[in-house]
Amino acid sequence: MKLATDVRGESLASYRLFQLISPALPIGGFTYSQGLEYAVEAGWVNDRESMERWLMHMVESSVATLELPIIEHLYHAVLEKDHQACTHWSDVLYSSRETSELRAEERQRGNALYTLLKQLDMDLSWLENVDSHPNQLLGFCVAAHHWQIDLESLKQGYLWSWLENIVTAGVKLIPLGQTAGQVVLINISAAFPSVIAKASRQESWMIGSFTPSIAMASALHQTQYTRLFRS
Image 1 (cartoon, one colour):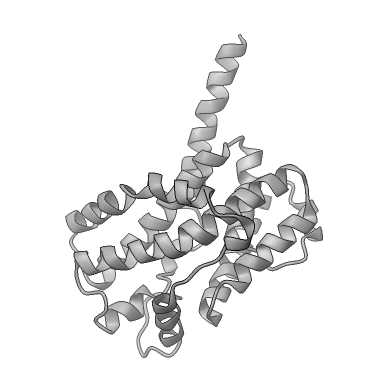
Image 2 (tube, helix red, strand yellow):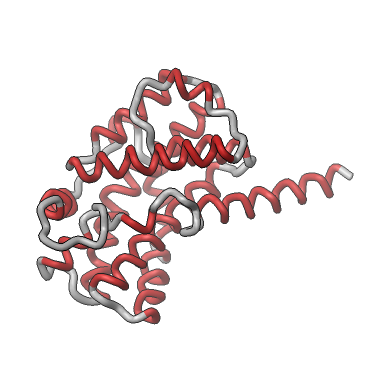
């Protein structure tokens, strides 16, 4: 009986992870391009190859060195109900967002996810003692513990969710055909095992991002004449 229970629990955790990373999750993930919209407007990204270069820069210099290591710290902090650690790593994440648009995106995603999790009957009352801006990564970690999603699966799921949302934006903006979008998904996700390995090697003092081109694109997007996306 124990084996059957364990298998059922693992199966349900997988489905809950799919739900958490789905584009259908009502937190507005599809409304952000993280500077890609301006990069397309400026001609920095204009085809599949240039988009792949843009995304590889993002994943290697931000996602692997900032988001994934912070997910690991927050995952353990949520497990231990460590308000101080949750506050610290939430502050690090927020302060690493270099423009007002990216900071607004962080708050908006976090608020939307917190609201959703409460509506799904998760107890978030202890987060009231986290003295920092809401953010999606902390919400993901809370949901992961509630649904018994393990840390490595959460990292993999977050990577895929990030990639799928931004590739969808690129397909619309450049524009790319649907098949070209699938090729981008295949090519970028092929690097994900090494990205996760790189993230695991980041010591606390190393956590941060270095993406000046994304920061410039995001800042310039704030005054772009026509915009489809919020960042």
